[in-house]
Image (cartoon, rainbow, N blue to C red; front, side, top):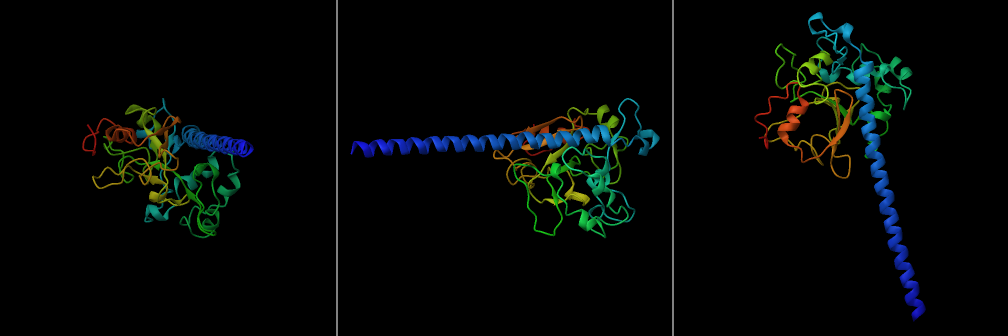
Amino acid sequence: MRGRVTVAVFVLIGIVAGGLMLTSIVARRHEAARVQCLNNLRLHGRDAADVFDLLGKLPPELRTADVPGAVPAGTLFVAGRPPEDRLSWIADTLGGMSQAKQSLTELAARIDRSATWDGGANADVGRTRLVTFTCPANIPAPPAGTPAVTQYVGLAGLDAATLSLGPPVPPRAGCFRYDAPTPFGLIQSHDGVDTTLLFAEVSGDLGPWMRGGPATVRGLDDAPTAKPAIGFGGQFGGNHPDGVAAVAYASGAAKFLTPRIDPAVLRAMVTIRGDDADGIPGGE
């Protein structure tokens, strides 16, 4: 009898130890995924700040010598073609992105810039998964033969991707807009690049990385009937166990935002003119 009890004790200890080990392994995997997710966004932030130097494409009145460069236009503009049919900012700037995780030069060379996002050769190019545009905590698996998607999108303020930049800059405008680039100098002269959000991760309504429109550029919907801003089933985030959203600032820094963030604060962060934070559900 004593021998059976001893065996049972050892079995119980083994089960407990195995459970603790499994919990530790899962926790380490979650933490590694969180780190990699932030690294992806930092990489895109650095690309935006360092590689997407569009100063030469800006009209003279928008050029600033102190802060060169610009956030790329949300789509490759083609007159008469709606944003949802155009190539995205990802496709438009693919050749200038970091090659550290994946060779993109040859892929970018195959893009037909005169066609729609899924026209001609673009349909085949768009089926390639871009490693740094998927969250390692929740890598999507679209059906075979369908376009690869992105889980990181450019932020367009408060659903304001179609706005011009004034002057004055509209209160709802963000870093991305469909038809034209946004100078970093303009962002710096208002809220500043350290406090203005440029990218965020999404887990719902994933769209092809090749496609313009909401697939790759989204604004914060601040309507009373809108989904929660951050968390599971929310507008942003939801890929990690705690529902947080990885974001990147116009400066290139990256961090996580929790579902508990004050709505007024988030509204200020996604717009260039963050001083206007009235009228948000839950805001002060």
